[in-house]
Image 1 (spheres, protein in one colour):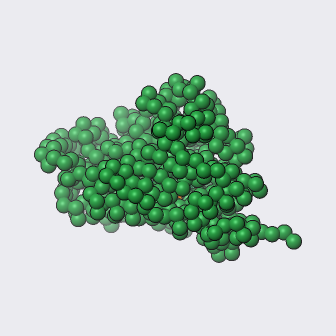
Image 2 (spheres, protein in one colour):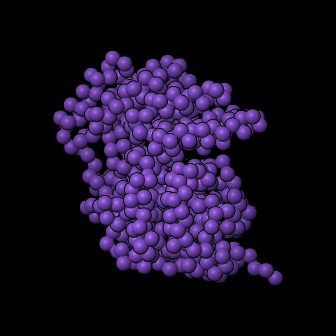
Length: 494
Ligand SMILES: Cc1cc2nc3c(=O)[nH]c(=O)nc-3n(C[C@H](O)[C@H](O)[C@H](O)COP(=O)(O)OP(=O)(O)OC[C@H]3O[C@@H](n4cnc5c(N)ncnc54)[C@H](O)[C@@H]3O)c2cc1C
């Protein structure tokens, strides 16, 4: 009689193993449009438990896929094999010190924010999904958010990771430990390619495409732990992580500017950036429900501009310079400096994707493939015109919003899934848009990651030479390809 994977895992793991139909169904979806039914789901109790699970999977050649809250938008946490959920037991904040925090991967970012706030601290990357998403997922996708403009993405704050590798062995990566076996091999692998790596990545402020080798080895040094940022669980499973944290600034002011349309708003970006805002976000009329866009008219566009400092005079000066500079071509719709109003206003911007995901009418729904490209802000105006032209030519409605200050536009065409013409357009439009972005030295993903949808575009993004290094990195960490296979490196490529 054959014993199922679930039964075998139950004999090995200390944590719960779920393999009933209902549980597998629940874990078969995430925030993407894909469905993959896992054979079993495990809740490891700690890293020792995870080690046993990985040793078993490795011996059997069984793929394992980590999972946080399942809010990934491109199918990153989905698998037909073993899913490892870190949210139930491995969810502790281990230590908060003056300048760092040590956490387990299953901690929800919003809960960490709350604890840090009590001490006057914060970890800046602030995805709109913070109330649900986990630190493990944020590392794996190199997540970001509105304040990425000033502070950077998850990768910029990651200082060390403890991991379990494919074969169940423990690893500990940080700047000081380049003698750790895997780190030493990584350094040896990357060193001959230093120049290629530094010239082969796009000059944009955020990037979640491929492996972020540019952050691993550069002029400043060797940062082996950063290879895990944006790696989508394909190199090993993170069991704890250390992050740099900052003091919450004393003062902030949020200004909402209304523009006639998105194109007019893109013209203002360079002007506004010259006043060093901590956030510069955009909500186009396409992403605002018709009831709510009275203040900006049917084609209007909103920019959310935040100024922050420990010096109130600096906030006030930048705010007033910004208002003066933009007053001829925009209207100040809201302006707030008290925390409650700021939170209320940000909620409107942060709720954008949630609202958009609900715009499903019958078989028509917004499809996330183009999703979150980044271009240099000097190219934004031409790029937005190009996107609008592509949608218009193909007679498609669309939504647009995003982190305009980073050149990071979130956009989805609204596709009728019952229309073969429109379904067939999804990939051809993405093809055109990605080519445009790559040609202009942008990235196909600034923060949402490659997942299943975009893994096939990574080679095009970086070219054969860098993609070949990615394959070697994958092989170094996961030689038998059991760590979330099919993500970062397509399945048919060895
Ligand atoms: C409404 C909505 C709004 C969003 N807004 C933003 C936004 O503003 N900015 C942004 O960047 N993203 C955003 N996202 C995307 C998503 O929330 C983030 O990518 C988030 O960080 C994913 O976290 P998660 O816990 O849900 O991870 P999951 O989706 O569960 O997993 C994501 C990846 O992490 C891997 N993983 C999980 N735990 C581990 C571990 N311990 N070790 C190794 N790999 C692991 C998984 O295998 C998978 O590859 C949004 C999503 C939604 C649905």
